[in-house]
Length: 407
Image (cartoon, rainbow, N blue to C red; front, side, top):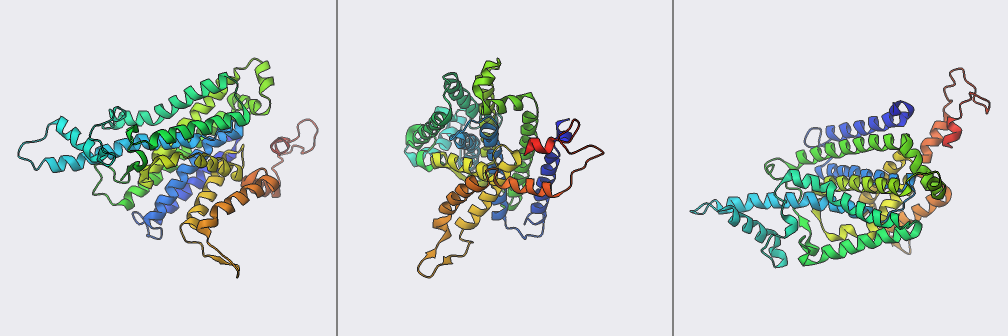
């Protein structure tokens, strides 16, 4: 089994389980209360960002496709679940209000009341066509992966069949993200324009449940999604599919010459990772509470690539490490927790200087540690004497060459 060949999978799952259990035992809902609910939400959102980074590593680190638009799929997943959350929660409020009338409201009156409440902020009282299935949770759950997946499929088919590669493909993915963001910014787009979708932390039917409990549930869901995605990614890269996409990354022309459908493999990994990002977004935004078109800004996808590069491109655990470290540091620096640094003639306010520090870290990692933070794990592994089991470590037949292959 592929898990036996790669012990890092079990190590990752064990660390993730310990992290989740530890956070639960220190939460306000099920533990000592050492971690406030706001911090539990930060940890849950961090796991969602780690899932998005894992998807980015698959498409960039393994397949060599530098997509600067994957956070668009992340945001679309958030919009799909946000539509149901906002519609159902508003429906509860409107239904409670109209129930006080002498005559019970009809379904049409109830829908009109929901539409007025949601879209009155943009001067409309009609329910847009895009919200046709907003009242159905099963359909919206399907749309979480269907909409971003279809967008990625169409975009990827058009780009890959034209053999757009390298920086040109990166520019196209950014253009796609920017076009989608500009469309959503419009008030008549059907998604409340710049106002976005808000109140997503209020789960319909669970209004009496404290946010401390709900935050832990989302932490569990985020950890479970990350664990399943990690196992799926490890399975993909361990077999023939992983060998082919790595070969495409290293020498696409030769792979095409050998008779493989390069476009098919690239389209598959591009679409699959888009759907993984969408699932991450669907778990992220109920914890954030709000989503607006600014979340689709191209800079967000650039950040995603930076996380993967800092963690270690081409290594699944490296992408997770990069996302977790940068996300937590960002929350610390931009949340006002980091003390200002006085230089005498100038005081560094980390809220303003965090992005500069992040950019500098990216440059330093690129120059001096191309394998990112995950190289520290490799260094620790080299300090341990390998298990020989009676076999040679030299270059002769039968020697242990796995370490040389991974170097």
